[in-house]
Image (cartoon, rainbow, N blue to C red; front, side, top):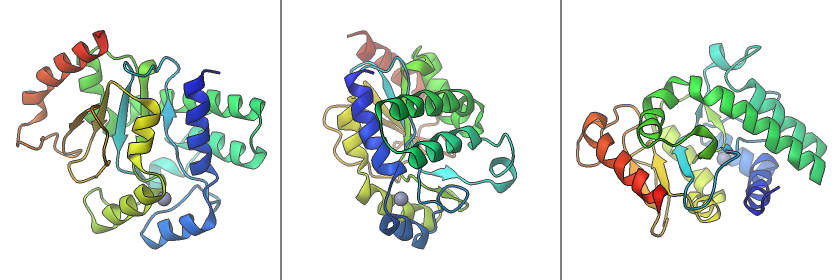
Length: 230
Ligand SMILES: [Zn+2]
């Protein structure tokens, strides 16, 4: 394993093995954990060819829980959940860490590109900037799941509770990506230093200045391409 992967696994473990106190706060804010009522949460993934200064960190709000699509056999997050729950149950060891990294990564790399959310938000810019998925990392600001809408008060509450326990800026410092792509104008990811932060409304694609994705995507893709070529 690479040094970066080890550090990411430490970060991921703090989320997967989060304590009951945080899980209760999450639930109080409207979040839910894994199926089966464990406190385990979703740390996201880091791609196999992610490198500091070159890799791209995609950040979203929270895993939207769609019972019809999720809590079924072959559901969107089923393989991710199995990897998380298996790691939590087995605990940490070199072999268990390697297995989790492999299984959760494979699960996300298969699942994420099929989400409408992924296709609408990250895929267009990643494609234009020629960033392969293997060089991408992904994490939601909130580590739980929720059935509430993106822009609801509950979603913002969950993001606040989770950010306090797992500050997004810490993940940015750990990964040192070429850029953070944030599909939200309302989330606060804290101080990310000189890392390029590209953000837009995750439902409409409109950026802070009011431009639609069609209008800003070429410039941001060119910029990201330049940063990665350095
Ligand atoms: Zn949480």
